Length: 294
Length: 168
Ligand SMILES: Cc1cc2nc3c(=O)[nH]c(=O)nc-3n(C[C@H](O)[C@H](O)[C@H](O)COP(=O)(O)OP(=O)(O)OC[C@H]3O[C@@H](n4cnc5c(N)ncnc54)[C@H](O)[C@@H]3O)c2cc1C
Ligand code: FES
Ligand code: FES
Image (tube, chains in turn blue, green):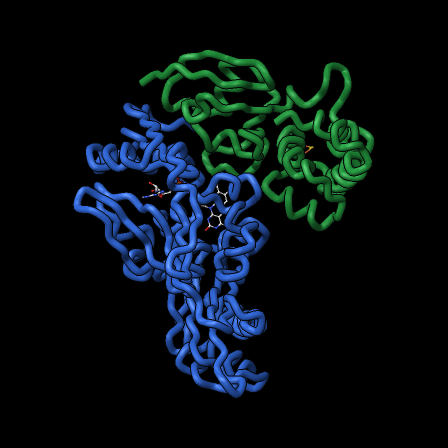
């Protein structure tokens, strides 16, 4: 299928030029990053195609740097690079896991972290992982720059607080405390499918084998692209991390989280998945926390 | 709504004026007449048979606009052989019966071309690398076998000879 006629196509090569274009044409134009969500939508004529601002040549956005011990992940970092990067693998494993679990090789060669978060499908893989890691987004617009936590940025399915004249410059991750581990696990009907359930966990070990801090975010549940499992977090925080705790969670988690039936799975099946994946993800994050980093 | 672009395809520079909305897959097929790049989806970008190598990496050409490729280098299935000599991966697909109708074959060749730049013959790694291309005929087993064979052959070549099979 063909997109509708695209009246204007811009290909800025500097960040300043890109921001200028977004400020001028923002409300009528789409920012085009990897195109792995936007181009299918244009072809399906699900979104209007008047103008495109292609940011693929803005090399300033393709950078990965450390900032105050945390990470600055530029908006043009491709998932292939994210999945392979040793620093991300060591300090933000959940994000590396999610990048590797999204789509297929060719999609990951183009798709960006930020494009996935902005598209904000309820089955997206990146947003839950970024939420477990307490990520923020750096936005820029005519009024300057601002930082927004990811849970405030993603308001609902396909809904964010991004202004029409703004663009996202980067995803920011805080420096992990010592003895922190994280992971993202995905369950789909087949590989490269949408997540029937996605779960991200980030936890920090405390003294005496206790879990000092934990953040759990689920994806694939219809309500929101990011479902924080705060009740489960409360049940785990401060507890001694052992088999008994995980066994208790198996039954408890599946009855605590609200889920739904859709074309991928029934609510009963999802509840069963939750009972399996909550302990499994916690255990993996716990193992990784032994290697310090995150 | 037109733009003049220059794209290097299989080593040859092409100067064309294209509609903004022209997909790279249609640019290759319709504008340049290189119909080896196939198209199997409506809009979803799932089947992978349109895969080409763009600036060194495998991408789905139905999910990129031709105007985006201005100044870039693209390799399509027509550029794999050296004259009459098949690429080691093409020969392996032939030897191992890696195709039946052949509709998906260009997609597998170009996806696994990128994979084979660092040849790995482990079947599970191969399977994971090729899940972005769908085949309705073979059941994949013979395609995996072909990639294994090509990986072994390429790994045994001296690096200069191997590099000649990977111009992009
Ligand atoms: C075959 C296939 C399989 C897929 N499988 C999965 C999967 O398993 N899991 C999953 O989560 N997703 C999947 N996707 C969806 C897609 O890959 C992701 O949504 C993708 O990461 C989007 O990123 P992109 O860079 O391609 O964004 P684009 O498509 O370029 O853009 C997406 C949206 O983000 C906006 N945007 C992009 N960058 C910026 C920026 N810097 N500032 C402001 N706005 C911006 C765009 O305007 C657009 O609205 C799949 C897609 C395909 C084609
Ligand atoms: S035509 Fe199916 S993925 Fe491109
Ligand atoms: S050989 Fe027919 S689709 Fe793969």
